[in-house]
Length: 454
Image 1 (cartoon, rainbow, N blue to C red):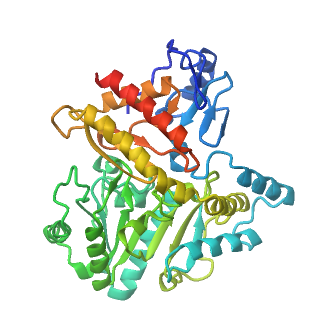
Image 2: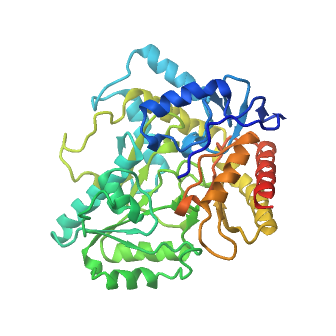
Image 3: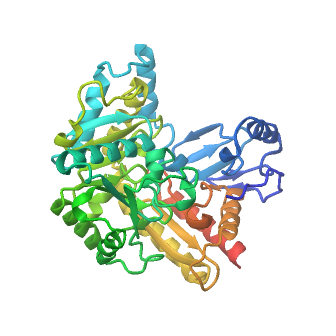
């Protein structure tokens, strides 16, 4: 990933209802802070646009020098209900006033409220909830449960976890073993052969989206279906976003049922209304055995969860499947308030309604630049433009970065380009965004693409 320059650049001033740019960027006075961060943090933390967040509210981010960005990042698909949602702020203040901010797995009332809410939102039969801290923890736990279940049902041979090429499930060992990006596994060296990957039916890189590819790939890898303990997939792959064809997802469900393999959906960045449905797998008409959740579960503080079938979730005895901050009171309070806000303010419905506006705008941009905008996809309020070298599917990360930086200079904030070679301009505003603000952001992106792609 290329680093953004921290040499201040004079940019045109912006003053609209949703954006204000009043200084050079990055702000000259912010450079000492950025340099201090670069001095004491590893370079892995240096990949995002160079602004110093001072506060964030709703769908806007502010610095202390009078600049205001329209936020199309939601942090990193965290703030589904919007930044600093009043209900979440009040819930956190109330919890602080109660003087309960840490509890390990000792019982507390808000935890009971949250797990009930999550179980009620999940499909029928998924009635157990295990709270964790991060999305990586959630996917690791789901993998552990699937392997435990498989070995118990079919012996040690039934331990294979199937995942997909280009998948991302987190940065810890098990999550990266299940991931489908070879470069992220080089540090592991001795990769566990109980993890195998098959092509993801994205319709762009993998043009053949038939389920036969799944079966043929397992056969070529020497994997017998009866030995598959679980299949884990993101509900959509984040580098696109890329979605499965509905028929493929349903055939995958059939495969799992016929072979008593657990079907795991990683909803860490897809859940809680992001795609216009509470869970993104609802678009496929399937019912997972395990759901990994995170990010938008609280719209704020670190929290994750695994939701699943009782017979699977009960495989471990009391005290043997816990985490230090499982259900910690502050994140739990924020999550309860977040879930209620998403429901009461109909933010999931808002995401569904604004999908047409967003996709119409992005398709218009692609039609203007068909040689370099190779693919457009999205559902609800997550979408992406794949920036390619003309006439190919080869990612053009340098050009994607220029578009991203041009938007930043104009007051539209997105996180750095993602996906293969950093080719995807990822769009994920808070679900509280209005149509007027969304249209303004589309206009800014359109202008930036015109300038960079000419």
